[in-house]
Length: 384
Image (tube, rainbow, N blue to C red):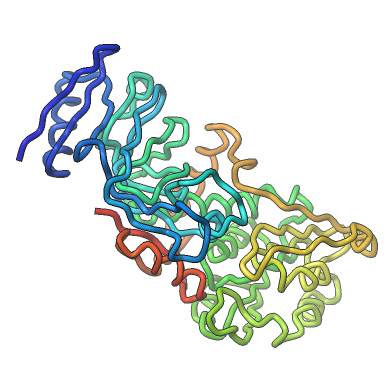
């Protein structure tokens, strides 16, 4: 095994080239510990790394694993994270399909967790150290290494595993803003909230968080995920037939609106959290209470079609289509949300189900599994 340093002529930064990732980690940690290298520009295996890359949009097989993708540059104010896990989320499939366009080619993913492998001077000044366990949300997490701004890092507290911490970043933070902020305080403690798809990832979190907020929760889920739904503490669970090979339930198998009105004594729900999309938009609007809010945050069954705003006049209802970035606008908001989630986890008030972890080499299979509706919790990539 060999490792060596190559110093930049421009500023005191170094490249580390190693034939073994374990040796590389030891060298980086040793140099940082003894303050030999104040800032690093990480290079691994002659500047190449393993990543799951999209060069042309398409189905799951458009996600190709490449072994010679350029390792990211360390930037001022940032770090390099050596990933152990990357989260697989529906938004990743929208990017892969081109529903949410991105410049090609791109590394998939936007949720990761691992250890800090290199720090800039600015990040070091904030107390970030090589070896720190962290989670984050930035593009490009389906890779061995990801460049992350220090402001986007979430320190992982003791007692929280990296797989759980990684699961928290997109799904956990999304569920947090959906249940704490997106409803614009139009729902109060003791009032009813309808959450679709509580057998899946994000809405498992959302159902539990809604209960922690003091809301009464009606959840929907498929028969195959009823055991998950029943474990979440929903006040009412509406169990639906399955649509084979999809990530959503048969929302025509039960008259959900009638059931919601029966459960709520004809009042409806002050908030509806809907990540299903096309198949549930009419149900969601129909289930609202007067001055209730329809929170549409996903497209599992297809995008929500355009509808006239006049549809909302009957109940003076509200509608919003939020996204996570607008509810983590600065580091203070990001950390505040993460701290509350990690606190609930450590106190045992929040249970996270990690369904399975695919090797990164099976990138396409991970997307196929998620889109087929097989998951009963968080789906991850395990990255060596």
